[in-house]
Length: 153
Image (cartoon, rainbow, N blue to C red; front, side):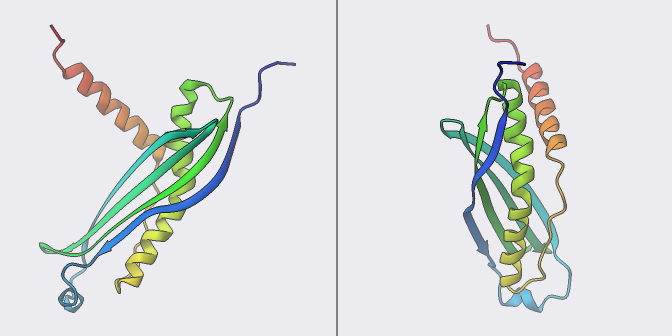
């Protein structure tokens, strides 16, 4: 039997850290019959907040435009405090950028939909996100940017 302690993972707390909604062209925008064009941006970050405790925040920004006029702009930050222990350093980054955002996503999806619906628009349901693919894409971009920088003299 191994003396290695077993990895531990648990959710300590889930909460909405920030939420905002802007409808800069209301009420006129409600008279439009054209469907808005939707743009979604998602970002996550994490930090250590205590012994084996990490806060991960998933932020989503949704902008809806009809022509060049903004129908609404909604941004929400869903956060969680996670207990992560006995996880190797190389695995910790995956937990922070893939596992935790996957757990937070259903909650931020609900917050965004609720805010948009309360603003008088048709609720929007964010499509599922593959955080593993997003993580790999970001790392590939960072590696490419690092290889393109000239060597310091």
